Length: 176
Image (cartoon, rainbow, N blue to C red; front, side, top):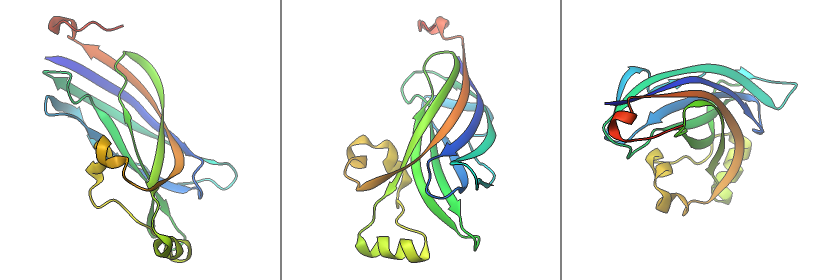
């Protein structure tokens, strides 16, 4: 079987309205893919940045996958949350990045967004926190349904990933 190694880290988040953030991540693959080692999901620590517009996490990712076909190429799905002064978690954004299809070192920028509620939800969000969330987060991967959502742009999460392929040439796949 062809193998893919993904080694790297979630390095930082920037341009979010408030800088007391943590990130939940999940590796999303098609049915042809199987996780051999590593964790397919995780959560960073809460990082607060008072003097700059960037939260630095450096949270490790180390995954080994095997595949029988290229359909369903892996993606990393993220949810960024803000921790307020009362210890409550508020969703600040959804996003995903596709794992690069070339070997080597890659810096990826994941642009996040969140649902933009109606006027009542915006009012409650401003004074009490919280806000609208997706009932079915898998909607993010459905291109037809995702564009029907009313959303607002949030910050950017940066990944620093190294991708290694093994045995792809045995299946007639050439890569650089």
